[in-house]
Length: 273
Ligand code: ZN
Ligand code: FE
Image 1 (tube, rainbow, N blue to C red):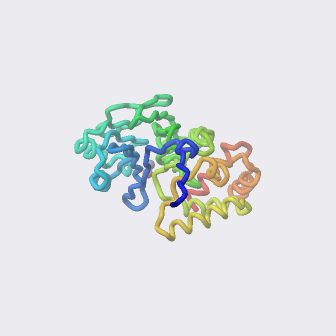
Image 2 (image 1 turned 90 degrees about the vertical axis):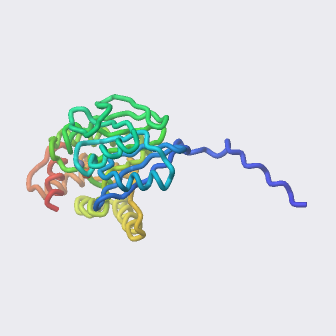
Image 3 (image 1 turned 120 degrees about the horizontal axis):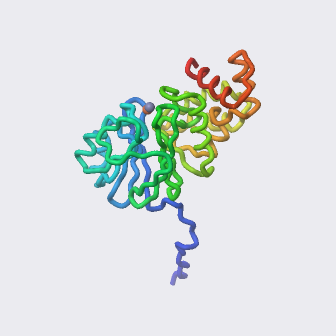
């Protein structure tokens, strides 16, 4: 007779906060990720720039679409919204003050919504666009930040100022360190190349570059990252670091007397990198 195996107590195993939820990327265009959040047989999608790959995934996985979360008005983020909403009846959430197709609910800073039973907090993070918002789900330890914070980088300043973007990034950086960062583009390797030019002495950055290059070799996304990782390696979150300031000053050829001035100089440097 075989000895009885002791029963595994589920309670003894700490479950991740989002055990019920799955978050997966849907690749679109050249380098966009449309993030699909699902729980049981329902789903929500963030920034569906294209409807077709979302509809395909929903069908493959037998999921109904409950919500469409939009961070900002650019075409690669909203192109599929109207037809997806029409095809599925999903509710469309988007920033107030921006023109979002088929929007049902206009959101601003501090608003709270419930999606698939999870609470989501809305942060207004202007800089890339004027009305850009991010969606933070504490129970999922997840941040959907569109084109604001990127892995090892940040969005371009199309409508906002350096002051606004620097403040927006600092707000995101202040979220809990283990928060996972689901941004909208696979720009990580190019961003890391720039980050290494800024901070060649940052050991964590070299380590991250190796890990991300290996993931891309295998055809895997480099996302999500975490707030902790971004704080350690993203130059745009590190404008108060002496090494980052020195590099930005050397490149700009002038003294930069505040973290915002360092941020602005880094952003300009990156634009031409
Ligand atoms: Zn954009
Ligand atoms: Fe984009």
